[in-house]
Image (cartoon, rainbow, N blue to C red; front, side, top):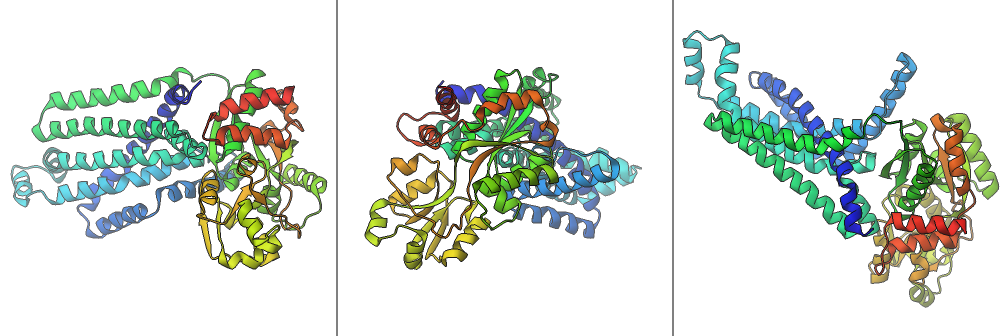
Length: 516
């Protein structure tokens, strides 16, 4: 299957969730904004407070706002579970819905207040003069006159929400953004283009239908308003049909992945194993390290691959190095006792943080280890992924070797290697299972002080499935089955520009390789 066919095959699912999220957020935003704007139009202090709040929300980067609501809702869910005996899923749809609802409010508030306050006072006086009550004047005179301007605000809100909904992918909500985030991480530009065009096309269609409704309100044309509402109903209905057509089946197992190639490959392998055992699955791709573990512990995810060093440093806040066997045992005991999460075991390879340089640059400066690097670091530029410079591992390396670089840059994980080879940076925080290390002949620097812990790939299962015999049996063949060189080859299939494979294709190759 080529990239276009794969992208086209995902469209019904991605589009359904994108439309459901966008329509729900816009509808909820209107339910809040319209009454609030009507009240604010008649109260100066409420007007200032409402517009001020909505304006502040707009200053928060949309991705940050989306991510912020996950931990907030997770805390609320735990509180309701402890106090009232029920919780809710804090990952995915709900935090995205709350954030997008807030994002939709400003244009609706501003346009509604402006339109109502802009009505000629003589018109209001005339309405009162013929005996209308304030309520009758509002609904029979003021709102009909303000309707075209209000609709213009709704159009703006709709386009904002549809565009911003693509950023819901990192918090576990399926959307058209899945194309964009996966495509950027795997350098699959067909996916990126597919996501961009799909989201833009949806926004244009919805905007034109709302524009038709706006014209209908301005011209008092019932036919235009009916045509607009019919068009919206058709677009929304067609988009949501695949979702409702597949609803009602048995509960699926949710597989989580982080935002890099290896995770996408392993996510496909897990899905194939479970599907082969008759267990239906769904995916939540592109999650951050902290978000994905919290989601698993809260049963918002059911299974994913993590790395022992990440759990050891980020979750357990450990900086000692008792050895690989001891680390795995203590992680397993810790997660079972504290969260009920099951550590099935290691997959057989390690994907450690490893600092790498171009071989010629390292040779010219005689740099073979992080200790050697410390002597030249003030003159060099380092590149890392979006997480590394805020992680405890980085702090341990900096403290252990006294590293201080002239320039520190962040990249998407796959772009770090291009930056290194182009000379934009001199050192990168690479990953030991990445096939591009061998492809580019990079020099991996030794860690003589053992500042970095082991990073065995480990299979984790949520508390709700910790004793699920069918799931555990289906995944057991993966334990200890994947060698480092095999994983490197699978990763390189996705990374290399020539004869590029999709994560699903690389996963199928990997499955065959580990069963030989």
